[in-house]
Image 1 (spheres, each protein chain N blue to C red):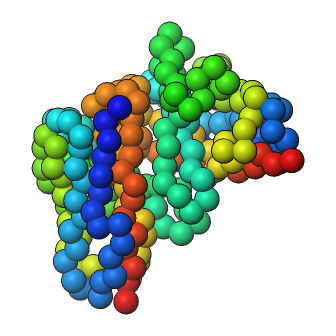
Image 2 (spheres, chains in turn brown, cyan; image 1 turned 120 degrees about the horizontal axis):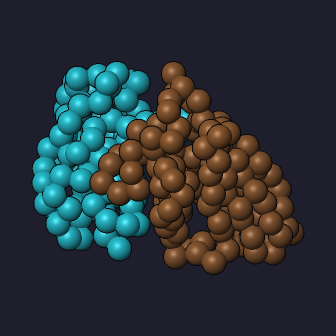
Length: 120
Length: 107
């Protein structure tokens, strides 16, 4: 069974940093690109970043580029999202998802999400 | 960035009805369009991939169609458990984008 388990969310002040983790199991991790998608509670879905299986290609949404960094460790079956210079508008539930590649395919499995609250 | 516009934003329907949700892309995306279902307090779940392909484990009453810029999700013989928000998503180009969502309420 495919499992994606996010962790690392919490309450943080504006301007501070947070690192999210996603532990994957039940599939061959390095066969997949990994994505992060966020959702403001009660609102829609926003894609924010993706990384290829070998970390060679990385993309970011304009809203987080320069502040967030995605990385993965295939030996640990994990993907990470380092979030710096957090803003109030980054408050959201952050989902880890997977797809065979960055583009061209659906996001076929999702974690339960980890909540990030940015507030003073 | 490709913009996806869903309609309607909200629909209230009775069980056994047939429901149609549309998704229009701001430019042609071929068949790189996928549908997700998100029930309250749950993660999104892939329903239909590549516009019309079924997904393992999804009931056969969910069906998708379309190509280019216009797509449709149809739910035949609606059931109470289908109450959810439905999103379309395109994977034709980066960034992947989602429609704004359609909330389905079951009367």
